[in-house]
Picture: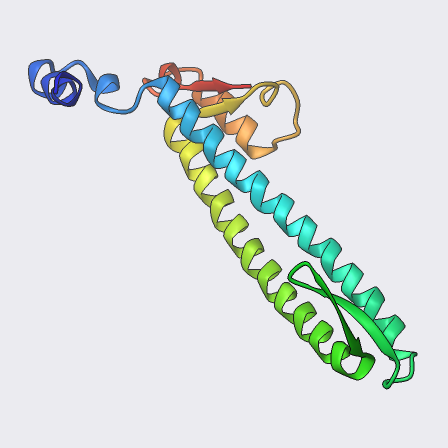
Length: 161
């Protein structure tokens, strides 16, 4: 109960506590790190699915050169089943198409997460370690170093390693 009422007490009790009404620096960093980890997980999953597509392509190309009545084996739900090439080939091509669609969806989600991360960084003036040292970040580094000269926002920045 005390934790819930502490934010309302700060808002109504003192007008100078602008920083305290928002999340703490630790909460900002934790949220930023969580969002970055989500984006990394998406990228990892997309890379894994790209490898699956490459494997599917290799198998499809191999099976196209084989007699359609030849028997082949396919792993379905952890069980190895015997089929013919003419039964397996369409299923593999369908799986490859579905994986491609899934990768496109994940890439769209990654782009949205990237925009969300950028907005979050700008909102809380988050700078990564080593970001301001070189010209690797382009405009982001230039704009953050320009805003540090004066103003109330520069004191509210968070440095993330």
